[in-house]
Length: 403
Image 1 (cartoon, rainbow, N blue to C red):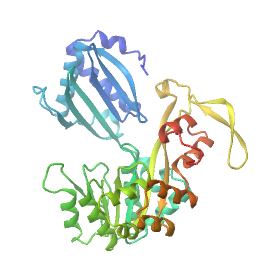
Image 2 (image 1 turned 135 degrees about the vertical axis):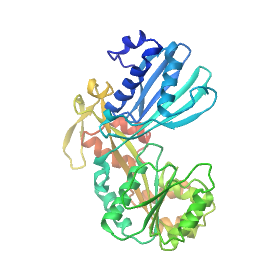
Image 3 (image 1 turned 180 degrees about the horizontal axis):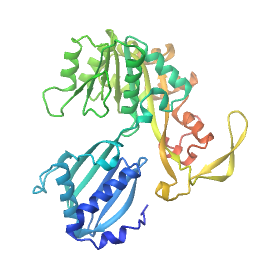
Image 4 (image 1 turned 30 degrees about the horizontal axis):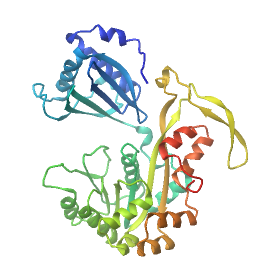
């Protein structure tokens, strides 16, 4: 989408001396519209500025090529980077402006050289006070109840899966806050790279990517410090997976994330990392797979011609996206959570011990009536929160058997 913003023409007439106000305006507008990332992408003839709005990149400005170097140089100054080095990647932080009114917690800048010039990306981290508690995230009642039961346990491993930007860190933070609030006196420690969300009452440790304190090293040491609840930002390798599983077997409640497209895929990945099947069945409490779907803009959504029948048998109108100034003409504003949870039961444990493949594990889940993430998302379609098209895009077009 190319936004026809009223300031676009004025940008074209600016010279290098005006880039300070130009960059400030682009950063302020990104916060105003709730963008998670701002991309400054150099091309052959222009510099494209894109906002990631509700997970989707949208072009908001096309600036003259002549401004490209000056815009990136200004960003480097804001991020405390070396302005004279244009041939290496650089990373930094941009100081939060007072105009953000406490909305933004952090602004991270990454610069990378390309054949057309330097590409810059600013990532914005917001202070989402409305997403602090577990009950505010939007899980279905069954999933919410299951997660509360898991937080009451004294040992086991809870894994969260999903792509980057699917809200896993927010869910983990809410789970830890729930534990700290509901079970006072528990020792809660996190290992993260980097620490993204501050949690009062938890000991948070930042792991440096190239330092000597790696995830396995830190985790081994922490297990000797009497923690009861551990959170690891991500299980990335076999060594970390092995220690995490051992922790879950020896009186620790451990939570972490893992890259996998499905709960069954996450269980198989542990086996591929060399974890013994009996260790997986004994340590894993549950796997949660989650995504975020865009919510229809309440200002401009309209009823579609078709109607849909809800599970209760009532007919409700479907809604479709249209677009207005409020939602940057996307038709969507904000996002909602969809998720599925798999808790290990006897048939699933038997399949894992028998080293079943992915299809066999998926069949076991279907046989027990597992509620898929797609099925969970259909409740939001029924409620007019999102559209079928958006659900299909996020989950992928699925067959009737998978639904």
